[in-house]
Length: 134
Length: 134
DNA sequence: GCTAAACCTTGCCATAGTGGGAAGGTCAAT
DNA sequence: ATTGACCTTCCCACTATGGCAAGGTTTAGC
Image (tube, rainbow over all chains, first blue to last red; front, top):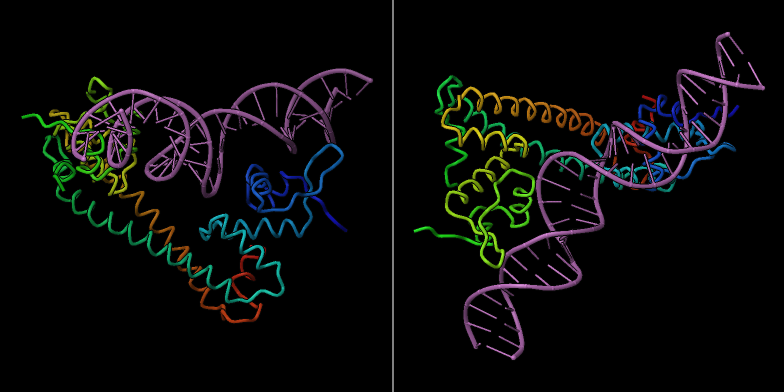
């Protein structure tokens, strides 16, 4: 039997918020769902799977644009896994870049914080360093 | 002598964009600058130093709200370095949290990508895993 | 049958930080 | 006087998410 869920239940089942499900539909990530006579959105189990897919991809940090592409690949039996892997690797490169940037901040700021006594006196190397003309 | 720079030159001198300098003023981070008769903003060397301060703090990933606080501490001779260090450490905690999150993504996605052949066939573990009901 | 709670709908606004662009004024050099 | 490079303000865009408001619907209790 086809169990159809309203958006609130679909949200619970998928781990997304109802708000975001509407947003994904509106931004073209999801096709428009069926509606009750009263206009309530209804989701079948295949759509619930799509929502889960989206949630997991968001968890991995994929952008909505990437997820759009991933969804299309997923639903295309003619896909080449090459395309999927390429998306993943591009995303991995972005992740690595962000990590590197954050680690640089971490390193510099840790050094600064270590050289600041953090007591009641006004002297502070963090401020001095920020103020230093590059 | 008081060398006054227009916003474009102040941007070059500080490494910020003119656009952002206006934005920082508008959002209360900077006090309103002097103006020429024609309404052009003018910046003195102390203000250029503030702009550099902001740029360096942005470089370390501080939010504008944090920078607001840092600027006030910087300009307050009565400050306690404790307060500065606390801001830095809170920010370091956020950085560490973001790094951890990204590293988690990295780890999971790397494993998935490794298990995807990336050839001309449709089979792909990345998609399978994303589709798996948690 | 009525009412209240818990849903649902759309639409607008906000966030943080940055960029783009338009329409118009100004200044310096030719 | 003209031209190009400035400057001004104002509005819009992005990403992904949340909040709120005004209104319709459904369900449960009385």
